[in-house]
Image (tube, rainbow, N blue to C red; front, side, top):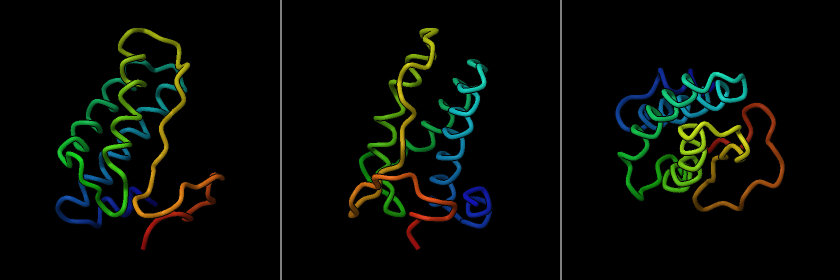
Length: 109
């Protein structure tokens, strides 16, 4: 779903979705034990997202996502064993979700 949105969007929103996808796929690689692939994709995703600075985009708290992802990247770079929880997306202007949403839920429209 997010990949479809990424392909359809122009400009900065496309970079947001692309960066989130890269981090997500990097975290998947981490779960599968592919440390090198995880590091490469998380770095690429973070580079895309850090371009937003402290700004949010599409109500995504980009600053928080970057801040929550950095310890995961540092742990991978230092050869750690995935003891840090994967980051989640925080929405600006909404209460935090207490449950994992179902497919398609939670995305701002």
